[in-house]
Amino acid sequence: MRHKSTLCLERRVLILGFLLSALLLWQPLRSAAQSDSLPYAQIGQYAVGVQRLRIEGDPSRVLTGFLWYPAQADERLAYADYGYGKRSALARFEAPPERSGAPYPLIIFSHGYGSHAAQSVFLTEQLASHGFIVLAVNHNGSTRGDTDAQTSLTLGWYWRPRDVLSQIAWAEAVNADPQSAFYGLFDFARIGVSGHSYGGYTALAAAGAQLDFKALSAYCAQASRLDLACLARDAEPFLSQVLVRDAKRGTWRVPHDERVAAVLALAPFNAPIMGAQGLAAVNVPTFVMVGTADSVTPPERDAYPIYEQVGAAHKALLSLEGAEHMIFSDCIPLLATLPHCNDAVWEAARAQAIIKHFAMAFFSATLKGDSTARQVLNTPAVFEGLRYQSTFR
Image (cartoon, rainbow, N blue to C red):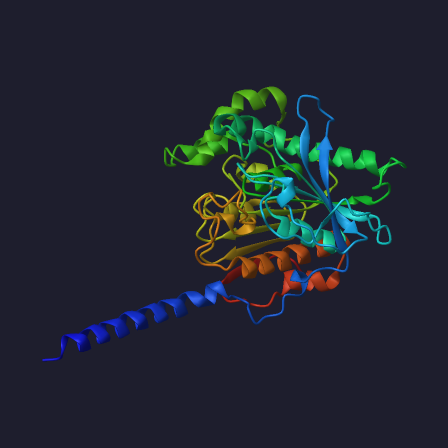
């Protein structure tokens, strides 16, 4: 009979071996693409500036947020003094804009429900470093500390895309003002919209997606009683008063801007409320990204149908294997209490590098005519832990 201490040692060795094996099994996802080149994830040629944003176009809906832009400075400051958690940043607050590369394409970023304008600084700063101007506001009634699910998921289908139009109008005003530091810096022939979760819907709506309550009702008749998408059924009485009906499609037209030329939807929310007919109205290049383990906006309900049903001739779908909903957000202290903020499978730095790489390639190809970036969308390197499909040619 073996000595008790020998048995304990063997047991410990077996446990250690099991843990090491589990680590090795998880490692491909955590370090996916670690050795591969991600050129569009690198910092761009511009220093980054950031300023507070306040839009008072509608007295009943004053919007606050941030403006990121190519700047003349290379200092790095923190956002801690601005109420957005203790994290480092590329951007320098109120740095003078860099005018040499102007005019710059405009990108609007829309945050998710219960989040805020600075939720994805890793991406908004990256875009600015590559010569884009990025605007993001706090959607009133839908931000952290200012949320009511019933109200936001009723009024938000209208007000969120309206907020995008308010930002474009604000940019037009400062662009035309010789006294503004941003005079002449915007290129309104090249507008992109991106958004996370409820912001993913916002981005699609700003590009022309319409609402289809018949499609939503058909979906909810078969869905779980707890399905968040079905909260939107209560919005029809309000929206039917403020939206214009598209008689041909049988859908409702949402406020949008025909100049929006590209959409990046990150874990977008509620494909059923748009339905096949409403999504078919989106005819600009569209990129959808999602985590396959997303429990907030399940890709089978939202991201995958959106990719299949948008009317865009050029579109792409990137799925991060095992990733959860918050993979597209900075997990700073303000958001750290949210479920799955720190992803259990993916290292944040690696996931963010991949997200930045494909997002930058997408906007560079569609808004700047970058042929090399288009090749990334057409024939991307195959990274372990990712699924990718595209109609870009």
